[in-house]
Length: 269
Length: 223
Image (tube, rainbow over all chains, first blue to last red; front, side, top):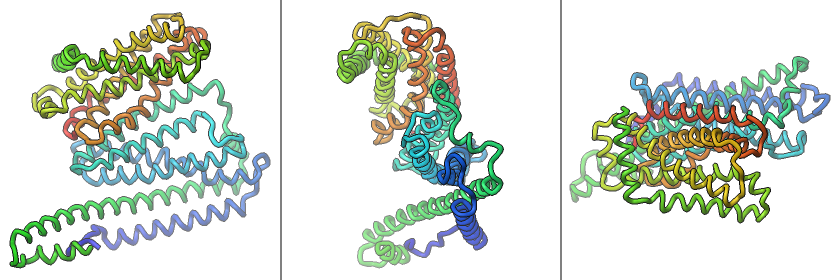
């Protein structure tokens, strides 16, 4: 609970309900994907049951590499652009990066799990793996910058620049790593599977997987955004509490009107 | 902008000439890295020749972190950073000036390192043109990206640890492309295999120089 009678939650009832609906939608879509992926769709001729990872791995990668990074880059630019500058973009950027980091890590983990039985290796210096791993480090760098304490405005500016500089690097990394590996890299497992002859139910399940993980991502971003708003409120109110405590000390035995009560409740919180 | 950049570069280089920190500390560290790599690889000459281009660029990459830290360390004491910001110099000029100073120091370092690679590892230079072009393009790319991150980390208490963490992954394409270009220049890979990599280095340098010119103003306000 936030000390004092601060009405946190700049969230309207409608927004709360929207968030809930989004969460339920994501859960239903994920459950349906799992059900279709594990029980309804047939095993693949070549990969047998391993093919079921196709309903998880590409959708996660899509969310991580395109949605999260795209949102982070665009909202960072919009924050840096003086006309569109608002805290909204900064909060959205940090939410996208943080959730995106989880999804990028998951991309590597699910890819690794898939790679072990099919390629016989947990890790290979394949172009996509390498560039995804570098991307993960870039995202972690953003989060490290984010954790540096300081004035929120300077922090927002720093993080926006980091996001932008990293975003510019992504295509360069992609091309360099691609060239680096053109000598060794044949068609990936993924391409073989996504050939036009994909089974009908598999195609639908894959599509549902994409929708499910996109919904999950949207829901997580919204939650993370709310956490950011709440933590900003908390920091502001902590400052208020500290100020009131100092004032109360200065005032001596006389109880200061609102500040004293706030300070007491603040200390308990 | 150009006049300001010459001023800033002149200032940084004059400090370097008088203090010789990069020349007396960073260059020896880079050479030491080459020696340490040789210890790690063992006395096998052919392995060293094979690995030389990569080791050269790794040494340059580490040295560039030090050079950038030094470049912004100059301005840490006595509010020199605020002084620079209040001086009315064009931020783009400040960026280009600092980048040029770092790049020039790195070029000197690379000349020493190249001699080191030839002497210590026994590499033979097949095409001077290609290694010089690749070296210059890579150096300007590293200096530009490094200066951006240096300005970002300057003034933060965690700058020494934050800078390499942010800068090295972004500089990874330079390591990759520089190594490939040098492999061709030192005659390890055949023919003109290095040419696309030199182009990539040029693109990297151009992109980060342009980005720095645009973004350095807002960045200075943040630090």
